[in-house]
Length: 485
Image (cartoon, helix red, strand yellow):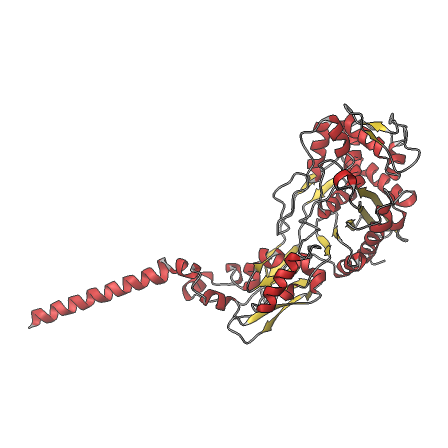
């Protein structure tokens, strides 16, 4: 009898061991696959079971959470949603996340291991930390000024601090309210379809995801290349620049919107945006030096993140002389985001150094304790310091007595460059009005802000000056907001 009891006990022990082994297999080794299984809703329910962390601007949240009382309990809410949409993106229970909501999802959802003082215990207990917050670099007054300045017109604004690369404003219009996509009902599906079908593309982040021909604002890069290469030594010496200028190897003649551009000095040509002078300068500098300088400013960079990705700005590396002439005045295949052109202005203001732009100052636990800071942001030398000094002089002249007069601010030194970029078949599209600039208050030791503005639906008949008429006042409002003037 004892023998049968012993065998039964051994058999039961084996069954227990098999049960434990299977439980370990399911709960430890295969837990990940079960978590990832689309049929398993527990992870999704847990994700929305607690309020999402906030995105902060100027110390105040521009996001929140609403208790819906449903199975997916908390829905995202937004304060001034359309104004901050290019920064926050959306957090949708149906369509996922974009921009900061996506790049910082681990912090905002509470899943980042850095939020827990005991991450190994959380792994064992499968506990979820309270969500953290994301503190942005945005200047609330600058963001509001940019949004008001565009006033619903199609366009974008990017503003940065020249010495650090901190992004102070990032606006794209027309915009949308991300709260329309937060839940999971029929209204969300309807809003998604409507927004995607809208020909105005309100969900497109024009400040960082749309590239434009930069037009005459690219002459900042061309002038810097010419000065660095020694092609130009005296800003006031007359150049050998015919008007019109026949593109090398072609019969195509390039003309100007301004008068008195023939053989104009670089100073005069920069103030009044003479295409012929800068097209010839680009050819004289040569493709190799022009490409090198453009890339030093950030063109052709494919991996820039702020922390979400930025569309690459491009300067063609394989061009003949005619194409190089057009590329050097911001046409042909030259394309730039507003953020890239803000960095061009920042390089001039910062002694020739281009700071790496960033949007997140730090991430914190719910109580405010810092989890991670912005970290080091390397500087890249775009031009020689002496060249930057002369470029500041040229840009200041544009505002003082050239096409950028509408950007002048009493109590501050402002440097700028206007531009009108042609596009469309046979240049049939409405020109894009550009303005890039930097500003330094009289009592500041260095420039505090660099701005780029593009307006897609500006006046079509104003040539180079439309950048000063349509875009410069917006840049002026942003600069005044940052300087506090």
